[in-house]
Image (cartoon, rainbow, N blue to C red; front, side):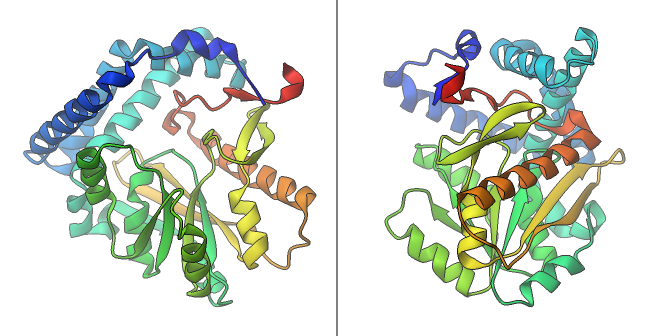
Length: 314
């Protein structure tokens, strides 16, 4: 595989020697923000989050550059001013997601007031087959609310977790994301394969993000008109375990609530083989793109989504 060298100009030059210090500073900053957020209501935190996002858009020039670069080829019909405004709104959404997550316990006090589920009967119907299932999601709206969605549905699940590499920061983020309904499996763990098998056999729902370049085994599929390296794990596991795949797509609503919609993406029987794996990965990606296009401002445009390139592009 190759890479898009345009991203090099947005590379953040971080000293490996200072990695521990950076993570310690991030941990302290996050704890400080957490204490600040606890002083305010959920709606006030949403407002603070938007303000934080606008500030980040101004200060994080390299992340801003990535967003504008990707918007330029993904949405060429927009003017530069429209692309810039869209990038700013994307930062605002991530800011809101951060502040909401810092006080996620407020959602748990009355989740149905803040999170509305659409077509949830699809989930229970899929699990009635007893094969487990896979939720595909993207980083739009507030994806950190998915553990609460599991709780509202009354289902159990699991996800593969990638540690940041600093225990205190890992512990703090894990605490915010923790749910009795979701088991986290560390990526690369020697017992990961056995854990995945056990979870599918226990009719649990795997949570799988499919909108980022994860640098894992995958396929190049179309995403906003350009080939994007996409993990093949969801399609591979669906075929391997004859599991239905459902889109769990969230969007932030104007009044500050969140709508989670469940969409059927694939179901057994599967044929097997690489061609079907590629076809399934493409269809899942198309579904995510369709959801993003409902509100382009709610996707994380500053992730280096198209950095990895097919070898034939040089």
